[in-house]
Amino acid sequence: MDHFYKAALDEAKKGLHEGGIPIGSVLVHGGKIIGRGHNKRVQSGSCVLHGEMDALENAGRQPASVYQNSVIYTTLSPCPMCTGAILLYGIPKVIVGENKNFLGAEDHLRNNGVEVEVIQDQETIDMMAKFIQDKPELWNEDIGE
Amino acid sequence: MDHFYKAALDEAKKGLHEGGIPIGSVLVHGGKIIGRGHNKRVQSGSCVLHGEMDALENAGRQPASVYQNSVIYTTLSPCPMCTGAILLYGIPKVIVGENKNFLGAEDHLRNNGVEVEVIQDQETIDMMAKFIQDKPELWNEDIGE
Image (cartoon, rainbow over all chains, first blue to last red; front, side, top):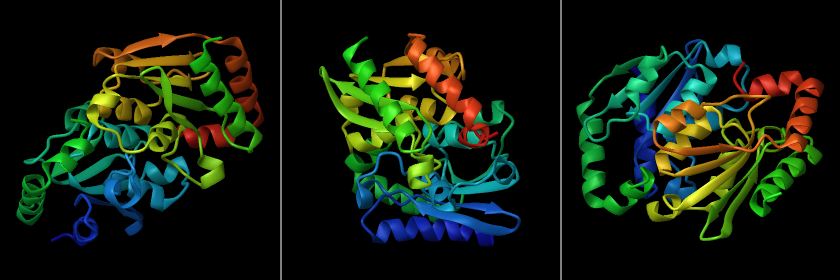
């Protein structure tokens, strides 16, 4: 498994062990991880810190040139909010762990010139499927349903 | 001026007095403000807490039914990230203070069924114009440019 994707998956697992929603993300620039994060709905009572948002937040304030030369890895297909953040900052490439359990706004990303690569990692698919089965109310809350 | 819009503008002014980017927002449900916020880039070093995001965050975790019967007020036309958050949670209506200084993703909101009303409040326009003139680098950073 790709080193960076493994780091995103490790973030998702960390979230799961904390009793949270297992979605993780890393922001990579210049061959280095500059931000790591995972969904914080349960842990911080946050409705904005999805995995990708938490990775962006933990990367801190960055100039546009950094975002525009970064890749964001996320274990799950990006929801409309995270998609919007990717578009706002002009991140050109997204590596997605899976979109079997949830298909986000990938078309909107692609229509705006973002390269989206979906790995369909089986370990990620199984982890997310089990979580949704175990805690459907938490999952629905996270996607606004 | 509308009571709720005034509260959003007061949030923007609070941000300005803190040395931050003067954009404010409130989330209104059942005739009451359930979340208030303003851009926290300077104050918290945050790249995700735009005004709208901060208002959503401060409203805390809410069931879908609350968002779906809420109105969000914001002093500036919503950027792609805040637009995505509005779409994620199914907020049906957005009241925008102005879009003269920045035109966000209003078309994307409307194309997805969200009602967008733009007030073009002169006080807001003047405040934002002065801020952009005074601190262009901060403004550009906030919109990823």
